[in-house]
Every structure is written in C-alpha cells, then in structure tokens.
Image (cartoon, rainbow, N blue to C red):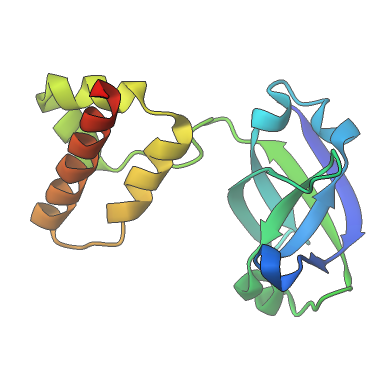
Length: 157
C-alpha cells in the first residue's frame, strides 16, 4: 500500500470556501496512489494525531486534506506552523467501518441491501454519519430506512 511523508505549513481556506485548516497535497503525489484522486487517506500528523479523510480539490490541479481545529489544539499548532505528516491509502475505500446495526439490517433486508450496494461511497458514508452518534437503536434503524427509502425514490426517477 502506498504512503507519503512530508512537511508543510498549516494553511486555511478563505472564509467563503469554508475557512477550513488544511494541508496542501501536490497532484504529483496523489497520482502515485493506485486510485489517484479517488483515494481515501489516513492522515497522521506529528505521529500524534491520525484520522481518516478524503481528498478535496484546491482548484489549481492540486488537493488538500482538512485538518480539524481540535487536532491543531491537540498538537499545539497554529495557522502557518510547520507539521510533519504522513498519508497512507486507507485499506477500506469506504473510509469508515459499517456499524453493526446497519450490517444486521442489510443482512436481513435484501431490498435495503440492494439499494445500499448501489450507493456511491460518499452516500454510504453520509448514511453512516447520519445515525452513528444516535444511541437509540430504534432511531438508528428509522434513520437508515428513511435514508434508503429516499434513495430508492431517487433511483426510480
């Protein structure tokens, strides 16, 4: 599996573009990865913070990885300061583990599994993030079913 290590200053997008902190990744680096710009990454900064992430386009042919403010605080870093980072291809292209409640539902409901399998990885992640913080299993299941039913209707159009 491909990986890259580098050093770079923390940058920030313009407020109108979200104002996110980020690390710029040159397109030459990304083109070395097997899935190129579709590659999901695991970003490790200063051997202290590690998180799963996706590539975003800067608009100039290069890419960036968002760095959450909480990670900068944890690292005691600020805008403009240099960090050593490593990016590795995420072995799970979905970029997130499928929670047990979703896995069980998909095993038991063939229609839901069929719809889920047709979703893009991004939509699958959106579904998982939409219910993962909910503690109540009944609410999780309702969220999953509602999401899949909306997708089913979109697919019929």
